[in-house]
Length: 463
Image (cartoon, rainbow, N blue to C red; front, side, top):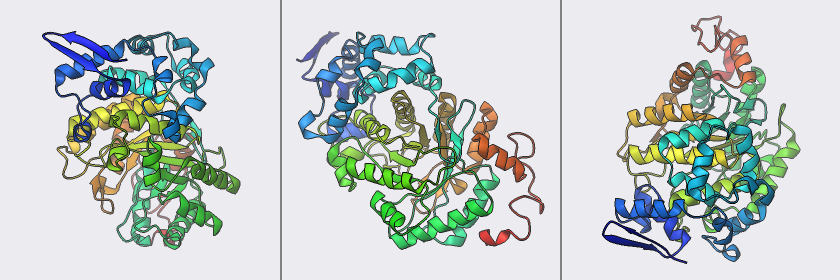
């Protein structure tokens, strides 16, 4: 059934729900590249007006990618909890927006609703919400996960310490880890993107981080962000794997281009759980996503990139992850052209992930050929802090010298924690105080020879 609307002197017609979702999406270069974007602002507004009148039930009946064609669609349909969906089952997309913004709709209510929502419902409502709407609703939602510490509690902000190096030099990586810890970073994870995907190289990095965590009794988890099959091989060889990482996408074909499927992710999770390395919880998976990945794999099925990004969150929640983050500006200006598009996408992704029950973080980032700069990232960082983002990245100097992109630095997290009175994960905060990294609560102590990480006899791990 087509969707039609007369707006001014023009008639607007959209043949199906997939097209309507794409045309209603805020402007971004990736949708224009794919040929699915609205041709102008008037068509976009017309699509948004029509989308607001669509019943939420329609998204269960009218699938944008057919059930028989796509494993992610089958996962979405098969896992939807009809009972949980009941409170909003009779609402339209526009009414759902109003319901989400209501005073009475609190975090507990949204958590109970989450299993009943499909990604397409969530993507649809985000398209008719302003930035402040996305921030307000996301700020109501807390998704708490645990492995060696507790992430996502109200009043807390965690940081992935990202000590990448272009040649995986252990001394350089150790120096970056030390630098990050001295800024109070690392409670989300100490996570290295390896320069090579070989099991031997990954095992060396895993052992380096395990020695540091063990020697200093640091209540956090490590991760080498290698392909899931490499992580499984490392586990088979006895390596100290805490978290299993994988990039994921919103269609079966895009995930196939990553060399994965749902069964493989399930096997990896079971293998990691069998190691029993967590001390306070058993969330062992770490996923990264990003708008545009399906288009870059030529696996978008004519859908817009934001809706497909939200479908990736259905994949993530199937495996109860510790961490999920959108690497929002990493793919480049072909998909998110400038700072305005990056900021909007970051808020959309965080909102949609949280509403679907995920522990969302964000790599607040851009590539050097995008029309964006660090001021744009400061803006997005601040907005995500207001929205209750679980974690951000901590990169030396905000400049990843291995992946060659710009992100957030160690001191950026300290800015956000000060401005919004946020703390690290409680177990990690206690360790920071014990090691005299924090002097007063949530304040960095001066670095002296008596500093807990710099005392003689323990420096060999960082030299």
